[in-house]
Each structure stands twice: as structure tokens, then as C-alpha cells.
Image (tube, rainbow, N blue to C red):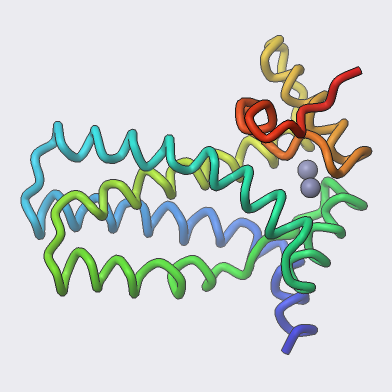
Length: 182
Ligand SMILES: [Zn+2]
Ligand SMILES: [Zn+2]
């Protein structure tokens, strides 16, 4: 089982499929609030923004306590990324729908909670943006100072794995005292 999951995680098709699956989930969540529950665009926008903000501490927590400290499977996958930063390793594409569709259906369909799906969509937006920024940091050189700064911070994390857990922003490293200082 573990072998099989590792093989899926390391395939290039799976890597790009995760983007398609996660974007589809995000759009599905938005469509749920807009057409099934008739939530207003303003309320949807506010909750989407709140969800995207909520992603940022999740990014820190996942990376620090799940990828570096968690169960063997996720730890091994992430360790591989540290060793080969440009290889295409990702969670299997079916993990996010399995984890997020049941609670979304329970809260937004069974209980009919309005706005919950927009919040979840924003959180997914953060997750997709993080995945893409992380991919870029290892693959692309861009001429922006802020980008180059993020890139060097993340390079430091690859060399010193208990510093700089934030990938898209540094604020949570400051809050939790894991920011690298010369
Ligand atoms: Zn990396
Ligand atoms: Zn790491």
C-alpha cells in the first residue's frame, strides 16, 4: 500500500492532476454557494478572503508539524523533496476530494450552512497558490526583489530544515520564532 502511494505521489501525471482536481474542487465549492444556496457575491467574497487568509497559518503548520514531524509517509515524501527539489512529488490527486468533500457536503448540503463553501474555496485558493509558488521557487527565476527574497529564504529552509517553514510568507516564522537570522 505505502509502496503504491509513493509511486503515485512521484508520478508527473499525478503532480499536474492535483492542480486540476484542486481547482475543480474550488470552483465546485464556489458554485455550491452561488447557485445552490444563493449566497450574495459580497458575502462570498468576504468569506473567500477569510478562507485564503486562514490558509497561511495552515501552510506553516502543515509544513512544520505534518511534513517535518508527522507520520512516516508524509515525512518521507517531504524528505525526498528536500533532497531533489525539482522532482514532481505531491499528495495523490484523490486525497483532497476524499478529505474535503464529505465535510463540505455535511455542512453545506445536510445542514445547509451558507458561506461555508466560499470559505473552503478561499482556503483551497491559498493551497493552490502555495503549491504553485513553491513549484516556481524551485523552477523559475523571476526578476522581482520580493520573489528572489522568498526564493533565498526557501533555499535556506532546504539547507537548515528547522528554519523558514513559511513558503509564501514569512509572518508565521516570526510569530513562532523559526525565522532564520544571520
Ligand atoms: Zn522546497
Ligand atoms: Zn521542508
